[in-house]
Length: 114
Length: 111
Image (cartoon, rainbow over all chains, first blue to last red; front, side, top):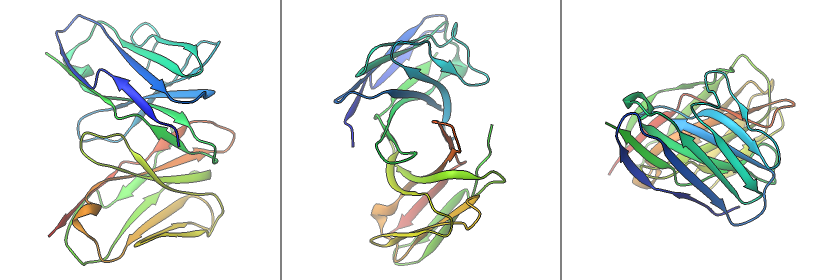
């Protein structure tokens, strides 16, 4: 399985500001994913990030609010823009595993917006 | 958006008891995964099942994929406090690369 790190691990931000979350993998992967996990809830996919192409966003998520970069096969960033308290969540990145359907997750970034 | 319903939503049991968590959908999945997430951590993959009717065992955990590949169950024998966590099923839709996560089951095992 891949080793995935995220920065920052947690942050407290003021409304109206933006935060960029970094995700680093210890091996090259084709597909990386960004999820949101609201307090006490399950995971919701925000977008899929492939190197060399624009991210593919799920219904309810837009690029202006959650711009994503994927400059190489080991790194991706997710920006939460113009934050409001409703954006307070855990943001998780994951990568596809070798076995069918499997994904491996980073430790998450805990965001609190005041 | 595919909907994966898990039941129960919350479960609190005594150490040594057995339990079963269910994951149900009206959709067919090419594979289904079970994850466990502990506070402050990301989900950790427990198992992947791909064949209808498949049963996999991981120590005290038994996972089953329904014959029609629409549902799954997780059975824990002789639960231990270390089993405490959020259990998530996730289905991979045929032809898609992303996972749809279940609603989650929060398990607490009391010593």
